[in-house]
Length: 164
Image 1 (tube, rainbow, N blue to C red):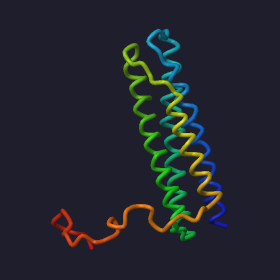
Image 2 (cartoon, helix red, strand yellow):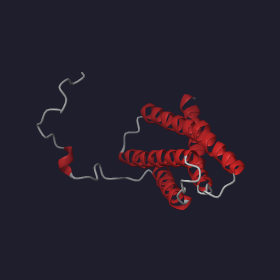
Image 3 (cartoon, one colour):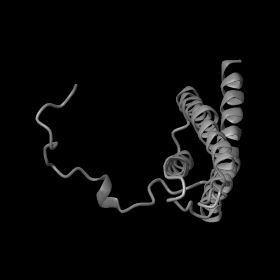
Image 4 (spheres, rainbow, N blue to C red):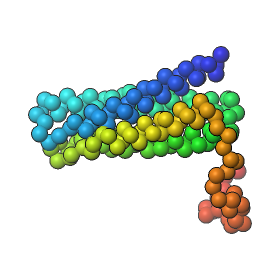
């Protein structure tokens, strides 16, 4: 029962997060130096509050619930690691979106927000890859990278104290 509730929470939060990653770039692209003060204020409050109060908490809940599901279900397989890499790209897109939100809100008239198209396309590509990996669960090779990355190098860690 707990796993079903976590899956529901994960999917609900993921839906909100992904909707924000698609909608906010398009809304931010509408910021312009020619905006009247009232229009600028309205759009700034909308984008800021959506990012801070809806999209970011949804991202945190989605990642936390997803992490809990990975450990509860013991899904330590190659397709999951590929999915986590795509989620990492979504996190980078989320961070860039936060940067654009801040710049558009703080530099009225001096900041020309980027076109929303490339950011939305990148987010949709990551979302599609995640959806494919979760639904298809493809059989991936054990390690797609070079074999020398898996070999110990026989060198000490670059820090003096190693936690046990």
